[in-house]
Length: 279
Ligand SMILES: Nc1ncnc2c1ncn2[C@@H]1O[C@H](COP(=O)(O)OP(=O)(O)OP(=O)(O)O)[C@@H](O)[C@H]1O
Ligand SMILES: [Mg+2]
Image (cartoon, rainbow, N blue to C red; front, side, top):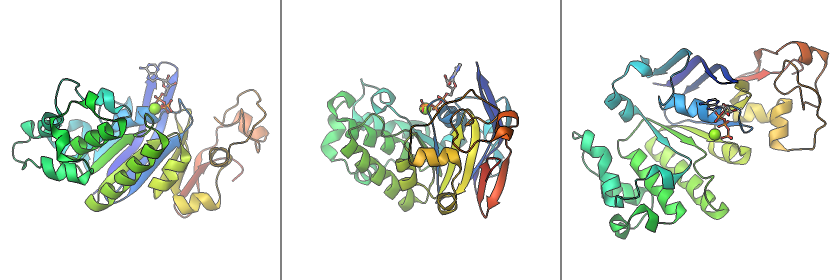
């Protein structure tokens, strides 16, 4: 069983998501990290079928995800969005919001109480409107809704970015715990590499719509590419005119080849791939 993208491409105006490949098994967490505008939300939208790629394939447990019935798809994949207050209908009480997923999936047992307990919310909250909840509580409701149909894969795009730092930590911890307990596959997207390191066993590091580095966390940490190094410990870098490699403009290790030739994504170790001429 796996969630898999193969050579997925998407053009959006000037932006081009180029040949993205990823694979996730239930029980694993894949972190996607990269600078703003690198294409993370574009990948998120494709994984939730909110956006159709121009090329490539999306497989879910061996089936073409875009050919699946909506009902079947929503039992396999659910998303957690960045902004909880926008993801919840302000005119509906929490009780309705947690029952809503079961309206279409009538064969599933309604488990509102268990869901609440799982995301550590008190039962009194059922009678409240989203606007009466704190940001952290709203995000817990969003997570509970995503869990209602017991999906095999959960895709989260910057799930804590609208929250205070202390609440961010609580939500990350909860998400990690839930992922483990339910043995789900989690795609965790953030521009904050520290969050991604905390959450993930595997990383996909993107820039300008391209995968720059990919692999097991320990392998990447042993020998990170110049771009990943910059994400890990940001330094003031001297800027030059852009070149073929998306990181050429800022890369402290760039050579003449990087200006002319886009490096391919190549294996540099066991379960570690890098797009860099000099690694
Ligand atoms: N519908 C669209 N039309 C044109 N360009 C778009 C469209 N949607 C996104 N883009 C562009 O595609 C690029 C990638 O956007 P995306 O939202 O995937 O980046 P991101 O990595 O999620 O960034 P952030 O960290 O800021 O959330 C951006 O330059 C964005 O402006
Ligand atoms: Mg984004």
